[in-house]
Length: 76
Image (tube, rainbow, N blue to C red; front, top):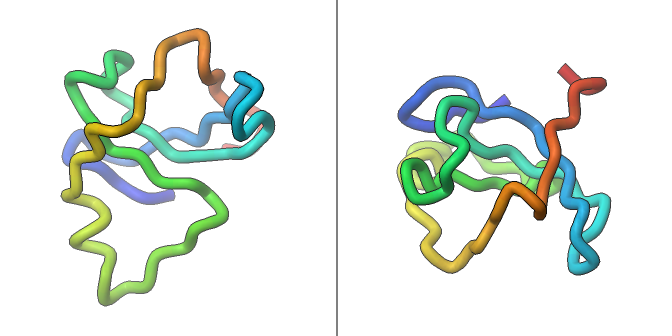
């Protein structure tokens, strides 16, 4: 699993209509997207050379509320 500044990220599943069923990683420590903006789609693998960039980036364009995602407990 990828890491954000707060540690290993959790795997979530989108439950809203757009991107429904698509899995992504987000911060395991911060439930409020304003506190940690780490986000990575599971199916978009990151090369080792680009990993530091993806782990440190902040994505302001994602609006993920608690209604938009759920934890995928079966895949840990």
